[in-house]
Amino acid sequence: MTATSIILAAGRSMRLRPLTDHQPKCLLDMGPKKILDWQLDALKSVGVLDVRMVVGYQKEMIQSHIANHHPELRVTYIENPDFETTNTLYSLAKALRDFEGDFYYMNADVVFEQSILQRLSTYSGGGFLAIDRKQCREEEVKVQVDNDQITAIGKHLDPGASYGEFIGVANFTGDFAKRFRATVLDEAVSPNEMKFFEHALDVMADKHDMFAVDITGLPCVEVDFPEDYEYAIQEVLHAFVQVTKDE
Image 1 (tube, rainbow, N blue to C red):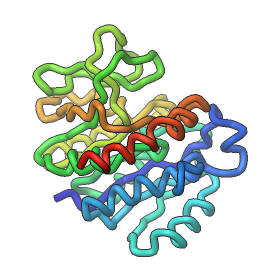
Image 2: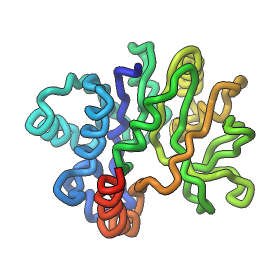
Image 3: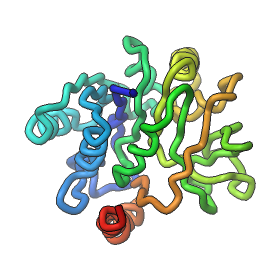
Image 4: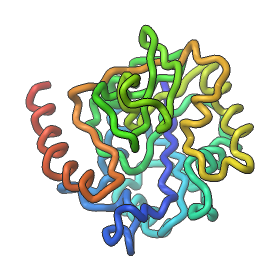
């Protein structure tokens, strides 16, 4: 059973200004909680109390919030001081340098219902990525799939030839987690400072054990733009309630 999570929360989120002028995106209000609270509560629902969090922008606010609201978690903070000039590939490399093992991966700006993580938790022996099957936009991280195996991933893929969107939540286990870690560390070098972490998944030579886990219909959204934030508040939170009623 995966027992650790890595959450990337270093960025400044300029596209959400002015909402993020004075606070990190993960601490934006999302109904009765913050975005980060929904994620941490989802982790607790699958028994995960160990969290490795990469921080940068307004890191003290994140540390204070977790200390006050989630004291039972064992959190290791890894700072990316270059958060304005690097991207998620570099942040993940910092989290993995002194860590080996299975881990859940999360971008700190994803609002999702905890049943998504619970579904991912049932898999082991590979890399398992939560995929929303839909017509993708250019901005979204897309995947190409062959019999559930992910053969390509990234924003650069043709939306018309893509299987769906990777929502930024995954479970990396077993030998795949080891190979992925090695690839991240190899690729987090110049000139890749602004690459997303999915770049490391895409360039892996052996993808035989990287799989799409279909979470279509379960409420989720990655909050990149103001319209995403409004959609999360107006639609995703209401869907959380409906999923709970249906279970």
